[in-house]
Image 1 (cartoon, rainbow, N blue to C red):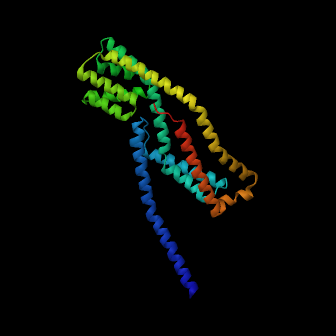
Image 2: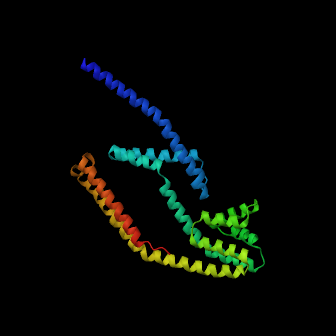
Image 3: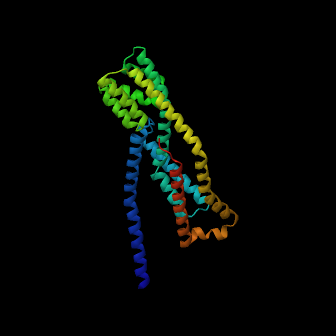
Length: 282
């Protein structure tokens, strides 16, 4: 009697689990599809990276599943491999933030030359809108792309002041805000805009050079922090290959998982602390 009840309860639990997974899978799939669609049509489009959302979803799923298979073949515990694969599928925005920061840094490097070119065009007798269009055509990406978008908005009927303000919102950097402010003030109260832009370009160029010098001076500290942070992980992997018996305790017991959690927390805190020490805001 007890065996029959156990079999019925087991069958019921299995049926309930299968039905729950069948109902949850479309919800999870739709949620991931909406995230991928927002990422492709929103954030990536803002960076002038045009990828269809379906293709982006396929790429992320392929990377996650491929990484799960590789980690499984390498003997990594199932919870770790599943967590890593799910992280790759769900959270690609860290890479997006890196791409955004590199793009903004490249734009700031191009900005002094663009300001100098615009100042020269204004001195030659061109109007502001015409000068911005010429600078947009002659500057490479990403500055050229942003200025082309600004010029197209103005040609479609958006006032130039509003287009400049949207440009400053798209690129939230102090140097870009100063450029937009100088142009708007000159349009409202008058003055020699070419001379103002020339001085602004010199100041922006000095800030870029100072930022590069600070980056060179703090590169050693960043490298030391990276090496110190990776050293325990590399040592753990080396010991796991050399003597897998004792090291397997970390991956098979609750105490080992707790130890790994503490190590990961301390590693993250040390990384954030070193990053805060070497970061200098201008």
